Amino acid sequence: MATPVLKMESALKAALDTGFSAAFGGAPERYFSAPGRTEIGGNHTDHQRGRVLAAAVNLDTVAAVRENGTDTIRILSKGYPLCRINVTELMPKAEEINTTPALIRGVAARFAELGCKVKGFDAYCESTVLPGSGLSSSAAYEVLIGTIINCLFFGGKATPAQVAQIGQYAENVFFGKPCGLMDQTASAVGNLVAIDFETGEISPVAFDFSACGHALCIIDSGADHADLTDEYAAIPNEMKAVAAYFHKEVLTEVAEKDFYAAIPALRKKCGDRAVLRAAHFYGENERVPKQVAALEQGDFHEFLRLVKESGRSSYMYLQNVIPAGNTAHQDVALTLALCEKYLQGKGAFRVHGGGFAGTVQAFVPNALLEDFRKGIDAALGDGACHILRIRPQGGVPMEVAE
Image (cartoon, rainbow, N blue to C red; front, side, top):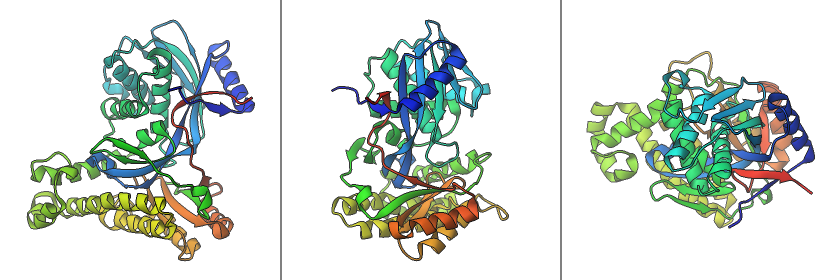
C-alpha cells in the first residue's frame, strides 16, 4: 500500500524552507506533518486498556527535513532552542526528564530497538498545535519524529499504530509522563477512530461531522499545565490501585460487578476518590461504543446526550476539572460554566483530555456559533474558542499541491 501524502500550500513550503535555511543552511529534502487530536469519547480510559473515540484535527506540527550524514539529530522548533541528540547515546537521561530532547531520544531509541539504523538528520519545525491547547502537541511531536525516522531510515515498515506506541514509549520511559496511548494513536492514524486498547482494534467510524449542523469547538481555559504531572499521574495510579486489590493490573481485567461488590473494602484500602475514579471508568468505557453506535446510526441527538453524560461523570467522579486545593484558580470549571451559559441548553460540552488545565470541548449548533464564540472570547480572551475540522490523514509526508 502506498504511503499517504498530505498536500501543502506553497506558502507553507516557503516558510519551512526559510526556517530550515536559516537554521542549517541549504535546502530541505523532505517535508512531514503530524496532526493534533481531539478526544471525542473515553476520558481517561486508555491507560486502563479501555475504549476511546478520538479524531485527528486540522491543526498540525510540520517539519522540513534533510539527512546530515552524522550521528546527530538536530531539531529546531520555531521559538525554541535547538535540540541535539547523538544517536549512539540512546539511554534515558535523568537531566532530560520533562524536556523535548527526551522525546526525540526516546523515539529514536525505540526505533533502534526494533532494528532500525537511526542516523542523523536536521529538521526545522513549526506548529499550529499550541502547547497546552488540549490537542496534544506532545503526541503530535512524537508522531512527527516517529514518522520522519520511519520514512527516512526504516522504509516505512512501522505501521501508524506502531508509530503511536513508539511515541507513548518515549513519553513514558524518557520524558517521565505516564500517559496512555490515545493521543498518539489518534495523531498517527488520522480521521475519526474508535480504539479498543484491550484488543488492539482500531476501527474507522463512518460519520461526517460537517453535516451534523454543529461545529466542533475547543475552548482554551487559559490554565497552565506546569506542576500538574502529579495530578495527572494520580488518576491512573488510583485506578490501578483499585485493580491491584483484585490482583489485576488494570480495570479492564476486573468485572464491574466485582468492583461494586467490593466497594466497602475498596474505600478502606484505596480511599473514596480512587473508588469514584474507578466508577467513572466503568461508565465511560461503556459510553464509547454507545457513542459510536449513535454516530453510525445518524442519531446525533443521542450522541450529544452521551457527551453531556461523559462530562458530568468526569467532573463528579473522575474529578479532573479542579486541581486539589485550588480555590482562586479554577479555569476549567469556569470554562464549563461559560459553555453552559452560551449553549442555552443546546449542543453539548465536557472537559477535554487530561483535564485540570487546558481545554473544554463543545459541540455548538451552527445557529449559536457566532454568539457562543463571542461570549467565550470576551470572558477568556480573543482566540480562546477554536473551531476545528476532522483531518483524514495521520502522520504523513507532505508535498506541494499542484
